[in-house]
Image 1 (cartoon, rainbow, N blue to C red):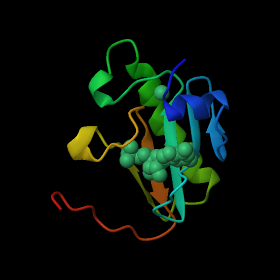
Image 2: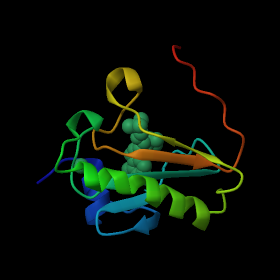
Image 3: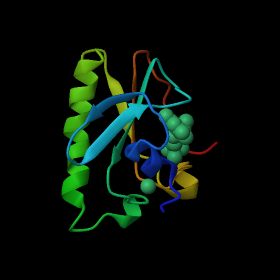
Image 4: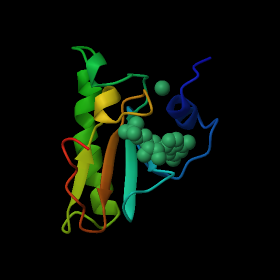
Length: 116
Ligand code: 5GP
Ligand code: ZN
């Protein structure tokens, strides 16, 4: 059995506040929101990070953009704006090794610093 927390959320083994689902993607509210709207979009297949994108799975990942657009519209942040961010690896700040995009909005966001 996969020990990945996001795979367990997708499978329903761990509860989540789902906001969107389609054939390839699942999206839910972040448990520790950094903005009034903070949603994570994850592929249903386990892909660890952008480093594991390839010719076979990239079609799934391109859908993350249109999912972000639909989620932003549904949650009322299309016009005010939002951030779409994918942290990758240790230096990128990735904590969960199942590729995911953060969609954050609902307030003016600070610009992330390049180096802390
Ligand atoms: P990362 O730092 O890997 O880019 O982002 C991981 C995100 O997953 C964090 O913002 C964290 O709050 C969120 N997260 C971690 N565990 C859970 C969980 O069990 N449920 C939900 N909804 N979010 C989680
Ligand atoms: Zn996973």
